[in-house]
Structure formats: C-alpha cells, structure tokens
Image (cartoon, rainbow, N blue to C red):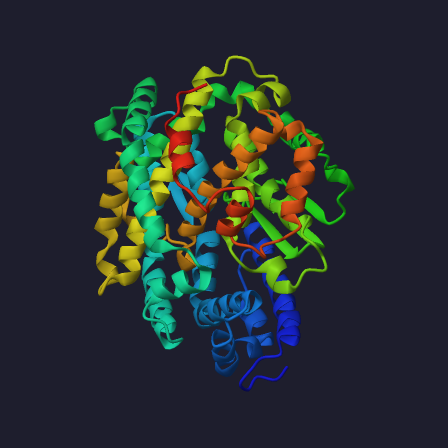
Length: 492
C-alpha cells in the first residue's frame, strides 16, 4: 500500500476491513464476558500503517467523493483512537474488574445497574447508585486525560476543534440538530412531567426526591413482567422476522449470544465482524419488557448488516452515517410499544398501563439525549472540560426533573458525538415507520412486502445518509416534527 500524495483506496480498504474485523472480535470477546481484559493495542500495532500521518493526511485531503469522505472518517477516528488506545484499554479493563460493595459482599460493577433497576426499596437503590457512582469516579482521571488528548488530536488533524471535526466528517448538521432538540425539549416538557409525576407517585416516590435510580426502577416495569415472559424472548424475535419473510435460523451469517456470564456487559450490542458474512448479537437479559426492546433493537442492526450487499465497497458496507443503522434498530425496537405487535406476537390484552410506561421511556430517552447533545457540545468546546461535572448534573437533571449523579459526567459520553447519531436516527425512524404504516398498515411487521422493502434499504448498507434516505422516502429530509408529534400523542 503506497501512501504519498494519494492512497490506493482498494489496498487501504482491504486492510481497513481486516483491521475492523480483528478489532470487532476483540470488543466482542471482552464485552461478551469471554475475556477480562481488552487488548486492542496489538491490533493497532499490526495495522499501524493505516494510521500513519501521511496516509491520514492524504485521505483527509481526498474527500470530494462519498467513498473518499467515508475513508477519511475511518482514518481520522482510528488515528485518534490509536493514540488513545492505552487509556481505552485501562478504562475498559478497569470497568470489567471493578466491584461494588453491596449487601456485605462485592458485585461486579457492570451488574450494578441491573440490581438498581430491580431494587424495590428507594433507600437501597439510591445507596447502590451512589456506591456505583463512587466506583465510576475512580476512572474519571483517565477519562479526563483521554478527552483532553482527543481534543488535541482533532486540532492536529487540521480541524478547528473536536466538534468541527465530528460535524464535518460525519455530516451531523449540528446547528440544525441543536435547534431541533431545543424545540423538542420545549414541546415535550409538559407531557414528560405529567407522565413522570404519575409513574413516580405510583411507585411511592416523591418527585422532589427522585433520582435516576428511581426512574430506572420505574422504567423496569416489574408489574408488567407477565406480559413479557422470558421464554417468549427468542420466539418473539423469530416470529417478528418471519412475518417480514426472514427465517433467522436460515441465516448462516448471523449468531445470537444470550448466555449469562459474570463479566458480560449489561449493554447489549451487535458486533458486525464481517459485513455481511459474520454478524453477532449479544444481549444480557435482565427481565421484562426491556429485554424484548433491546433484543429487537439489536436485531435491527443484525438484519441491516446481514442483508447488506456483499459486493458493495468496504466504505459503504462498514462506514458512513451510523444514524442509518441506528434508525433501523429503533424501528424494530419500537415494536415493543406498538399495540398491534403486542397483541399479535405476545397475545397481550390490557395494555394501557404498559403503553403509558413505554411512552414515558421514549420521552425520557429523547429528552436525555437532547440534553446530552447540548452538554457534550459544551464539554468539547470548554476551555477547562474538567469543570463540567456539575454542569452535566444540572443540564441533564433539568431536562429529566431528576437528581443526576455528577460522577457520570465523562462515563456518559460516547466518542465522536455519537449522541447526535442517535438523535438523527430517532428522527429518521419515525419517518420510516410512517412510510411503512402508510403502505402496509399498522401490522407492517407481518407483511412480507414490507420485509422486502426493508431488505432493499438494508442492502444499501450505509452508502446513503439518513437525510438522503428520508428524501428517498418522500420527505424533504430529516424532519423533527413527526418525532415531536409521536412523543406527545395520546396513549393508545
């Protein structure tokens, strides 16, 4: 592979795909609880020529085409991560090895959130939340160093700052998105507060004293577990995909990991090791409706990557706008809030209380991420990012009407403003869902024609952005109004 003024894209793409496959296997094995430590340094070292300064500069200077832009995204983001990998390993390994003192013993740090959500006693769950936050804070010095270094690296690559780099390379449209989220926060405030107050009161929690631990318990919805029996989890997925004309067992390129392991991350994920040849879904069931929503969400990623055209260039199969794959994931995950799906697949009948809880969950997530976007923009632009812990608690607490732990001010931040991808995905998902409902009815999930339509979209990989796909669906582009209307509608 020659790296002078221009990079041989074909050779670079081949090695980049091999690098991503090795990296994804490492993240899979660590997060699935198959190994305690995260060891990405050997992988970066083996493929270090991908991130040589001359190669990265050449790719950043060759962004006129779509493929060139996507390869520049890859080169810049991984050149930064190459410099941060030691700290990344220390944080990930520290989290997997950490424990929280609880009930006279020690519980794995990564299991504490599950215990909080299932703890009925307010004092106990708040205590466990505080103990967990104390452990989180112990890794914050490393997280802070990592953040500062990432800011320096963005500037060294020729960008004004970290925010400008993310906006320019990923096409996030941050000016428009920030204004749209301000509107969303203003127009959903009353609906959110009404639902939050009602559900907290039902759980015996005073809104004035409520913390994120209390809402985690409320959102866990223990009283609705009978609607979501654990033995229906995988059959519900199979039935849903079959309705779309997809036979899960016939897909030799996909695998599901639902086994329980002590070190397994509580955060479900899809690992596209090779797109479309080897795609893995990992989930750690915790009980109730969240298991079904999470499994279906990750299945959206799974089917997107598994149905991507194998002959498409690497950049279109594995890179591009992640708002697209997140949108497909939200589309399937949101079936758990669809009355028709609940009645057809789970044979549920009395849904009013659950649907209210589900709507509260949607409002919570959108308001939380809207506030996160504003906070992260401040964080990445601050002269002294280390002073923003209290601002994090105030900004998210203000949006959520809850007490938020300031210790999470760095742990709650994903690289490269990924929260913007989630927000763009939520917007795209509503537009896509409306298109499916218009063409195939409320039971689009049982239409093979809808499945064929989705497979045609999935086959594109991420060649096109969410904005471009929205225009293909007949819209003028991404539009926040359908999302706001969806969030503030009356419960079914």
